[in-house]
Length: 439
Image (tube, rainbow, N blue to C red; front, side, top):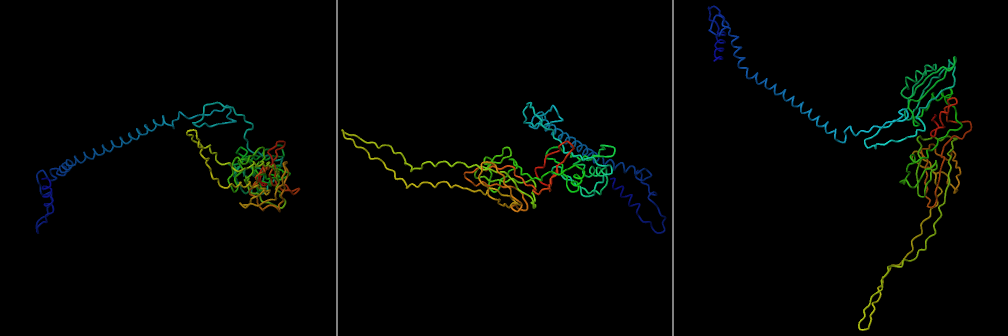
């Protein structure tokens, strides 16, 4: 009905005027209750809004249902988290099984306990507190000039380097702390009114974190008295069980042993001792070691006789009315017997080898001696580079012992290893590895 009335109004407003007639507007036509004269627009809007009420109600209900759904989802997540957390309180990951290790002296020892740790109290004797390498120079004049160059420092397996343009000790200290501050620390201290000392120390503690000088840092260390030349440059092969590796065949743990720096090889054993860093052999370098052998007495061969064969019991018999009939004895035909071959004895004094990039080179044969004696191999007998020291004991009746395996420069007056000094304080021993490492 409402639509029919609206259609009539639109037709009347769009009817063209006839020729000669005056123009008129929709306001000239008045329909009771419908035209603007009677607030028609407001009435129409009210009727349309009335028709929209169910739709608005449905939209509001949809928003309400959506909000309820979000609330239920959040509640479900919280319940799930609560269930998971409650299970962890009684599961294997619960925090009540965590163990804590307490130390009476945390400055000297700390510990971490795992869940499987037993509740007990232990006493540990600390023979030496882990410390970092620390170097101090001689007294240097206030106007000491540090040369320019590449300064390279190594702490353990980490290395840092930078180029210094030259200058005073104060400028060098600033450059070290800025460019290498993650590994080392440098300090300049005035020991008198006119002199000063340079202190360089590693930030990491432990024997494995040695502070090593390279390139221009090495030259400065010698110039400033931080490092001094040692009588002999030595590279020592690490004779310890953890450093020994198989060579070409499998290595059984029971076939060798290490005790007090002496390596003992049983018959039929071969192994190698790799160097942490390969050594380049120069003109005056020497490989030296001490070796001994022990002959195992051969056991007297037991008398081997032909096997007697199986034991056959006596045959039975039968007796009837005073007459006894004895059964004949069984016989076993045995194959022809051949005695076994005697064990093969192996005598091989070619025991010592050195390896260069996986290629082994044999050294001169050894000789038998139950007392240790020294063997030396000059540079012409060695390859240009040595990666490892190898031993092969093919003998069937000989035990071999080796100790003090080392490489050094034998040229007098040409030492290559530098040893740190700190006044009357001993900083360390000569390095065990590498003629380019300094302590």
